[in-house]
Amino acid sequence: MNAWAQFYTPQSAGQLLVRTMHSEQADTVVDIGVGGGQLLRAARARWQDARLYAADIDPRHVKAARNCFPEAVCRKLNALHVCLPAKLGLEEGQADVAVCNPPYLPATDLPGVHDILRAADLHDCISAKRVTTEIVFIAQNLRLLRPGGELAVIVPDGLATHSHYAELRQALCERHGLYRVIQLPDRFFAGTEARTHIFYLRKQGGASSTIRLAGATPNGDLTEEVAIAPDSARERLDYSFHAHAEAAPSTAVNLRDLGAEIARGLFTHQECRKLTIPYFHTTDFKRFPNGRVAYPGHVDHPERWVARAGDILVPRVGARCLHYTAKVVSGLPVFTDCVYRIRVAARWRQAVWKALSSEAGREWRIQAAHGVCARVLGKEVLLNFPIRVAE
Image (tube, rainbow, N blue to C red; front, side):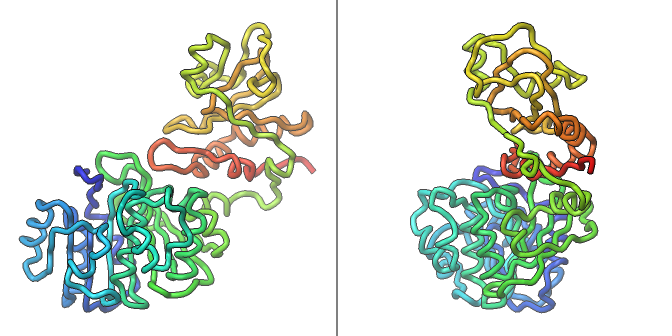
């Protein structure tokens, strides 16, 4: 990664991204964040007669691109500038294909962002405070593409899974023909554990009846695809979640059906430490390897603060702890804001405990979490956790 938060595209990712695009022919190909040049190199290999346009804010990347692609138009530009097409020497609506691996940074204070999003017909599906550089890069690429032109762009996990971007996902499906998403392997990019995906779009292409999802191996091979409806795409677009959900037993109910109450802790870990009270944090799952949480005595705290006997605890956030499950057998520990307390009627507790602590249950929660590095399991998602109960 460089000073502009650009994670360089591995060769296998560049080749995968380009070879799975639909465009058989292309007269003009653009890459407005050329970086190490892997995407442009793969594009040159596939569309050998295409005119190449490349840009980057880092002069070292521009110099390297000019050396590797002397026939291309390579310019030092800020791809987030509202006048990008003119500065690149390419009219809006001219390119046939765009490939992109953008940086991941906030873009709330960037001048001209609203105009860029409006030009791509994405201005009304994302709040200003949620706009990030990868969203602006998507809009800039769409500006450059002709109607029907194809974009393949690498995006962070949040854009594919977080509820904040549900309307944006819907707009990409309905207005720009989002037709495929490939989930790249975790830790695929050097120097980060970020989970990423490739979005494939057709400018003004209209909605597809189904959207195809697949995973990828580190070598760039694809898994078997899963097809989802556009309504499901609005909720999330990660292959691992939908593939796992498809394998869930059709007879299962979920936590919502059972009337489960899921509460997040009120205090941070640091606040609990300062209060010197019995508390339970994500690090405490390891203290109770059998999953039975026992605390001595009963401290008088408000009911909303504490977990009591019969409650089930699972991590809400973490990088490598989401597979843990525990149940309280004694005491009244305060649980931190990194932990969920799950309460269900006594008749369902054993079934819920068995499902959450099973190998399949642990895997479901891991895949259902979202986030770039430290992953978060959303409450609404957790309420959909499937459970097989005795009939």
